[in-house]
Amino acid sequence: MRLGTGIVTGVPFTVPLAQLRKHTVVFAGSGSGKTVLLRRLVEEVALQGVSSILIDTNNDLARLGDPWPSPPALWEPGDAERADRYLRDTDVVVWTPRREAGRPLTLDPLPGFDRDPDDPDEFRAAIDAAVAGLMPRTNLGGRKATTGRAVLTEALTHFVRGGGGELRDFLALLADLPSGVSTVRDATRLASDMADGLNAEMINDPVFGGVGERLDPGVLLTPARGKRARVSVISCIGLPNDDQRQTFVNQLQLALFSWIKRNPARDRPLGGLFVLDEAQTFVSSRTTTASTQSTLTLASQARKYGLGMVYATQAPKALHNVVSGNAATQFFGLLNAPVQIQAASDLARAKGGRIDDVSRLPAGQFYGATEGTGLTKVRVPMCLSHHPPTALTEEEVLARAQGAAGDSSANPAGA
Ligand SMILES: Nc1ncnc2c1ncn2[C@@H]1O[C@H](COP(=O)(O)OP(=O)(O)OP(=O)(O)O)[C@@H](O)[C@H]1O
Ligand SMILES: [Mg+2]
Image 1 (spheres, protein in one colour):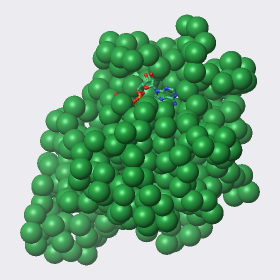
Image 2 (image 1 turned 30 degrees about the horizontal axis):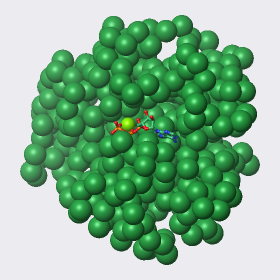
Image 3 (image 1 turned 180 degrees about the vertical axis):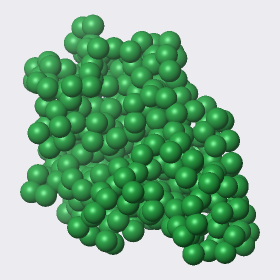
């Protein structure tokens, strides 16, 4: 894929599709052209028949399905044709967790398990992941948390082996735990305490076991019939604070990881792309949040299964170094704050390059490097979908979420 042209050399800056498995980071501040770069990347990947999921924190990604009213002056030869093809063959779906007026998406805290899995380790890992997501919502602390976790693990194993079901069914089991399910003394009382906590969470947090389409990565990444790729934009308009966003992204990442393990890309160069803008919110270098562990797991393990991660941040210093250190492809764009410039320069040096004029780069110019190349200054092409200077309002995001795209007649996964 061509993602730019060398400013001095005129040489195309290309990244093999499979290289995106080894992840991409974009370090660039406001006005750098970061959104255009992320969009063009997703568009080019879609043109190759690969679907993406994007977390839209700034309402500037939900226009990925909008055509330009007239061709932008900055398009290069061939872009008009590419734009037509992208818009025709791509199914852009805007999701609005916690906003019923749009296209809500609900967290399924009990992933669809196989009752008789071939691989007991996988089964145990799926139970552990679900328990890890539930524990912080049970309100148990201290020593009780340890025994509570054991009870939850035993109860969930029992529940799933018995056929599973909805969260409310599981809470009914917990509220009145039959004897023999858990070996922990006091299990019945602990289980009923946890049922109370989880029930309160269901009331307080509509994304947790609430209304809307179940968050199923297979749906997010599977195009509707007749389309080649799906672009799922997950809008954060219904998740106003960082805490909610982190919790949501954590659940999404857990689900995505278990899905991609079951549906690996195998011999396809890339199975899907997951784009996390404002990545420092989700995996910070300073604090541990609800989404830290799952982000690190994906950053280090998703490549095996062919899922590519793209992390973008205006604050390279605030991004966890495992994430920045794991990315084979890197872009550095305009940065202003001295501490961020310093952090970016250190990261560039680790790539064997310098970004001395990073504080003066015009919009759309980046230092880019991928495996086997040094850093070169490149001009990134304008995106294929409409990107005016102003972000969408909430009403405009909701209108796109209600759009006809993405009907539920999607092909079964892998079709
Ligand atoms: N690749 C490009 N080629 C030409 N112009 C570009 C390019 N990228 C960005 N621009 C110009 O810069 C403007 C800002 O770009 P963009 O919205 O991508 O910036 P951003 O870094 O995401 O900024 P913000 O902080 O506002 O989100 C665009 O509207 C466009 O005019
Ligand atoms: Mg932007």
